[in-house]
Length: 306
Image (cartoon, rainbow, N blue to C red; front, top):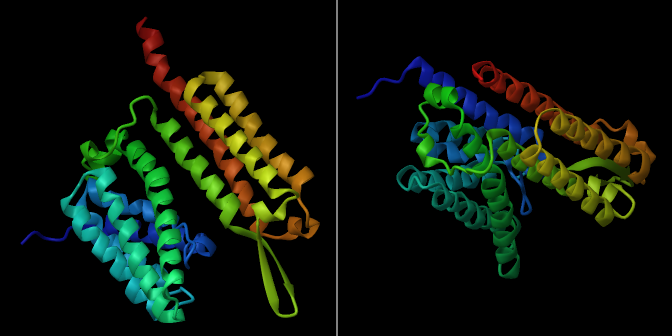
C-alpha cells in the first residue's frame, strides 16, 4: 500500500483551501439555482492528476457547510462532486471529462432544490438548465483555459506531478493570453451576477449587481465586453511597451467610466462590496505588468545571442 506523504497532505490542503476560499469569497454566485461556482475550475485538476480527488471532495463539503440550504447542500452537493470525479479519474480527456461535473451538478443539485423547496415539473427542469449552463461556462470558458495555462508551466507541472499532455493546448496563445481569456469571462460573470450593493427597506433587502447598478445596464454590459475584448486583443496580438501602455489604459478607463458616469445609486460608493468589482482592473494591470516583465526577461538572452 502506497504511503501518504507529507507533500500529498500539503498539496491536498492547499487545493481544498483554494476551493473553499474561492467559494466563500464569491458566495452570492456560488449557491442556488442560478450559480457560477468559480471554484469548480479546480475540478479539472483531476484530469491532470487524479490524486487531487479527495482534496476537491473535502473542499466542496466544507464550502457547503455555510450554505443557506444547510445539510441538503452538504449531502447532495458533495455527492454531486463525488459522482462527477469518479468517471473523470478514468476518462482523462479534458473536453469529455468536463461534462461530468456539468451533468452531475445539474441533476443532483436540482433534485436537492426539489426536495428542499418542493420544486418539481417545470421548475425542476428550469433548475437543471440554469445550473448546467453556469457549470459549463465555468468549466469550459474558465477551467479549460486555466488548465492550459498551468500545463505550460514546466516547474509547476513537475512539482505537482501534473500530466500536461492531458490538458488542451491552445497553440496560438501563450499562457498570459489564456489567463486573459479566463479573466475576461470571470469579469463578465461578476458584472452580471455578483451583488455589489444592497438596499434594505421594510425588512426587505434588494441586491444589485453592476449590471443593475448602472444607468442602462445593457449599454454598460456591452461597453464592459467591448473593453474586455480590446484588452484581450492587446494581450494576444501586441507586444512589449505598446501592450503594456494600452492594457493599463483600458484597465483604468473601464474603472473611471463606471465610477464617474454609470452609477445610479451614489451611496454605492460607500459600499465595501462595490469596490470588489474594481479588483478586476487592478488585476488586469498587474497581469499587464507581469506579462511585460516576463516577455522582456525571456527576450534578453536571445538578444545577447544575436
